[in-house]
Length: 401
Image (cartoon, rainbow, N blue to C red; front, side, top):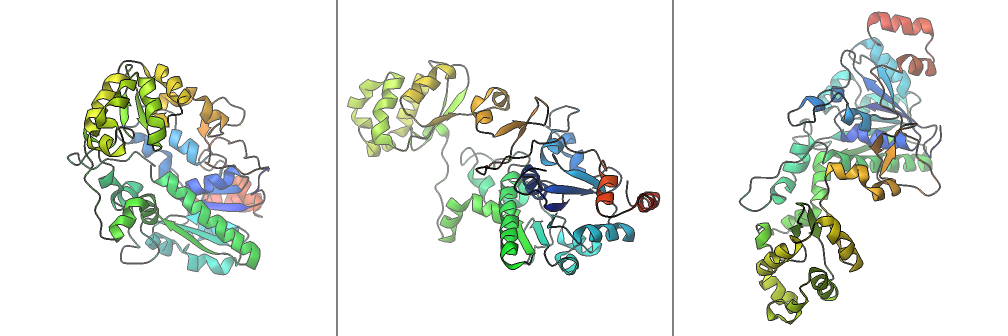
């Protein structure tokens, strides 16, 4: 198998979403990722998310396809002693073990760091939790909506304005960024192992990642400071960093920070160059004082043309802006494909979201479709020295399926 992680054996004993997504990134770069799933319906993430209210009505298991691509599925009952023995055998020569099971569940199953460390001194044990490895809430379960978005203050801060309720996140919105931090922890542990020959515990949590994502205002809070209540869009403090609706209903977001240089160019694009002589907008200070008035003027100007007409004009003027994208936009987004952010499944036209970084001189593995439940059970067991008779016995016991 190609890739910088070719030859690396990773056991993914995780679910919902950050921990298995970190394993997905390792698979993208060539690691052999073995997905451990319980008998029956397998990983709950296979079906639960698509049945939640508000999800698209489809037979396509789109979240599972993304986070489980390029992995091999081993259906294994870890509650049975024989299943635990299989896992221990796999761990014996594994490079990485990844889990986000709650700490009490790990202790019950005998797969905590303390249990697996004696089996393989080179093992990197990737532990992902909701609230961290220690403290009064370490044993609590949590999801990104609770431990990442709500607890960190992000949910409160990104509300539309001070009078609006806290803003709800969408599924995986905190999990996928957290996966990258968790991946970084695992790779850092692997780098240390290259220097020392010894593995170790690499950990991350939703709570820590939520605080890191909210670091700008989290640090303010640590100094006892409070941000000003967020105003309504039309009452914003800066017309040059605001959202505007175009004639076709599409919105764009401006982030014009080099205001002194770019403001005249923006007014030229909008056909408002006469405002350069208006004392209310002569400099940053006066523009801030009269921001709601300027926002109203810009609202009328942007409403005169559809977004496809504004886009080349703003680009030509060097204005920093971005369309407020929709899911439908992605299929036609040439830049997303050219940058490698969207890639096709191997041998298919169907696209998937690639891991968000690249390495010079290293090709990512062409993503393979996510496995069916237990699709590779026999193959994985044979790879780890089990005979066909051994596998038949395990199947007969219901330990492997």
